Image (tube, rainbow, N blue to C red):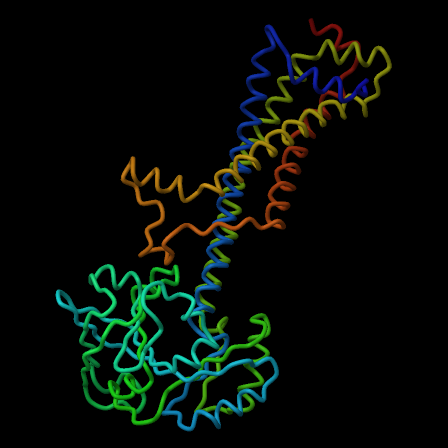
Length: 411
């Protein structure tokens, strides 16, 4: 048999007849909590997924630590040996980065060109894993382009493109303009629309010819065994390659404004969407206030039979907790289902209503990233239950303070 407090709370929640209005308010309150929890879970999972995917894609394309210089860098073996003296460094690869124009049959577009050593590059990035068509083959005037760029320009493996270097001033040591006819040997898809549209890869030799750098290059990509130690490794490398000539930056420093903006937006979205749950809590409070009014005579009987103020208070507090608990449970279930099918929902909205929920050119990715974070989910559930308990305090206190004689005279 259920304890008296739990039995009474459940009894009050399934009122019938003339008191069915209170049950309707209860259903609305549960729905409000469920919607608030579901919205919070979806928003926070998308923000967490966005943050994680952005880090993974950046680390998949660039090194964990990047060394650049105010002038050209020569003698790669010696520089690599110096850098590998730092703890946790597992691979070092040279690169040349600059802007060029790629002219195809029907258009000309600007891209960020990276000259790399393909054998060394696969040690510091995931470029080799991202190849979806062709191969990472940059020898004999080969070029690897992004999937978005290939789609827009209608390029396939084996097609010829003309790469034009705009001229001096873009890179330290670069001279006049140059152009080369290259063959598309590979197409990569990182999953990040910006990279797939704006990045192209050629060999170091080709980049050196395009930018007229001789045998020099302008940067080193560094891979470490744990990205969380990137800043510490960056400091150690900075001591080995002292400024002002060398600039050593970790992946966090290279993207600090972007990741800081994501965190700020994540916090703001949590606060804004939490207001839905607060509104639902006000509904819980109103439900309990009405319930206390409707059950005044019953409260009087309970008190006349010896029920203490604490027991009466617990009955209505438990009622608020149950509403919050049921609403939170439904919201969690609905949130998990929506998160698991969020891209299908976005595609359905786009196909039937013409609304682009997650345009790749705005949000970087070609699909909505969503990731369930256990700790964030626990915080959401805890906040929803806490708000439900707080909403029930005043009505429960009001019911407990009611005098038995006044309550019995109510009707």
